[in-house]
Length: 193
Image 1 (cartoon, rainbow, N blue to C red):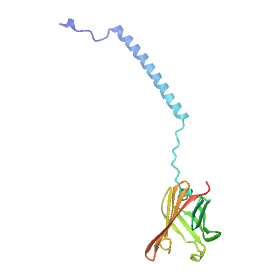
Image 2 (cartoon, rainbow, N blue to C red; image 1 turned 135 degrees about the vertical axis):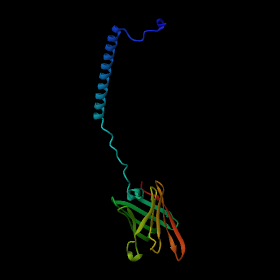
Image 3 (cartoon, rainbow, N blue to C red; image 1 turned 180 degrees about the vertical axis):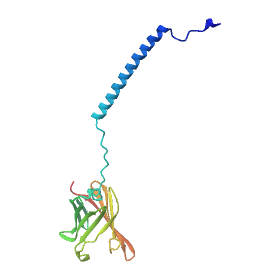
């Protein structure tokens, strides 16, 4: 009955050989582990971690940079010209004038100023408001549009600029006069690129 049982345990002389093989395998694994650890340390020290940068927050006035330049509308009534330049990091200066023939019939100077996070549109119109500046506060903006409001002003109460493409914009003034809504649009083309 016990004749059919196979021998599972190694012979005494085999035990020594197996122990030697295990020792060699463990030494190889230890050397591989140490080499891998040293390589990891070397590469992590020599390859700087990428510096995390936050995307630059664009200020309200920078968002209006597309306005810089000379814009014009030519119609049968005359020529409307508006020019804008950047004075500094917080102020744009503009001039607007309407010419019929050789006569300038209206003109204004304009400033767009950033105060903290607030953007102000400040026109001074010749022969209006005792030539005192009137402030309009930006109430809405996107990368292609700015809307300014002053509900206490007689007209307009709202002024907007919308960029329709890189060389065209529409300026619009609107408000309520004697209980009736009134608006005027001024599509303009950029004349300097």
